[in-house]
Amino acid sequence: MQNRRTFLKNTSALALGSLAVPALAKNLFAPEALPRPGLQLFTLFRAMSDDAKGSLEKVAGIGYKEIESAFSMKDGYYGYSPKEFKKVVEDLGMTWRAHHVGGAPFRPRPAQASAPAGGGAAAAGAPPRQMPANMPKRLNLLENYQQLVDEAAEGGLSYLVCASTPVGTLDEIKKSIEVFVKTGEACKKAGIGFAYHNHATEFDKVEGQTPYDLILSQTSPDLVTMEMDMAWVVKAGLDPVELFKQQPGRFPLWHIKDIDKELKKPVEVGTGVVDFKKIFVGAQKAGLKYYFVEQDMAASPFESIATSFANLQKITA
Image (cartoon, rainbow, N blue to C red; front, side, top):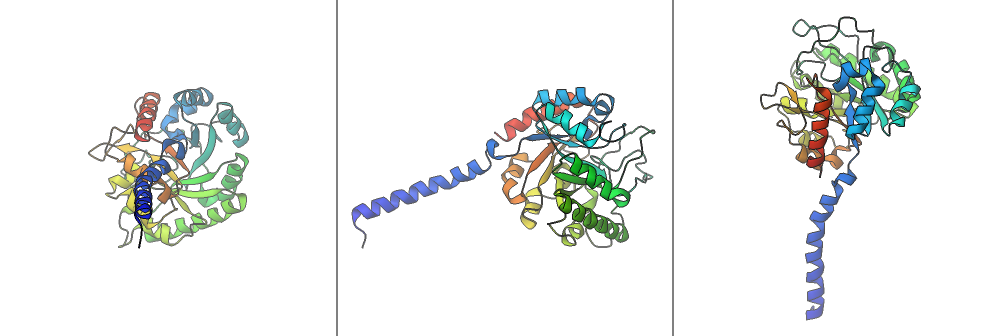
């Protein structure tokens, strides 16, 4: 039988333990435990095409620390080689973490003939966008996966990301999965991670099956991970945190993108309907390593990314 002293000691320990659990949970997702804030440069498409270095100086001045690149109006990486672009980014106190590429050559869709494939929201489920007609030819994973992997390794990237790929038929999905596996294997040999970036269309049924589920179930987590775009998951009517629970550790990259209440238009982080506080609490379950703010076709992109950065600091505080 416990004496009074032992009873009080055990009771105190239990009380302290109950206080420590929420404190521990809070510490796990405190701002200092999260990755540094990053930016997907497609948000600044025109500015980066016109003046990459000047644009990056503004990005660094706002406070972003991690960079994910995409295509531009210039060849290569905003007119630089991978090593050159890496140096420009690092000289500004930031780190180049990932790069977006297309899964297959772009084929304009009748309803969205001006939408590009290979950066940002480039498929159904994303708003139409007007891109210049004189875009330079872009490499893609179907035809150029080894070159793209080699260039990613040259730039010291952590991840190569497929920004979009055809998923309108089961044959397209099968072919895309084959390309992902080959690319994932090449990335693994090069010491790089490979990820696939979703839109809303991957959650539309194709002959009774969901493309997103097929990609997850028919690829190995060692070769193919996911970059979850929060706005498009919410537009598809799904809960990002529930997807984390279904595939824990499979989501090392995130796009922190918000969307308006009509689920039609990307807006500044913290001004739409995406519950980012809840999502960030799921960071450990997701396996989060890096996240990047993105806002497709923002009218005033530098103002928009500054607003998103400021709101993000409040959300993660």
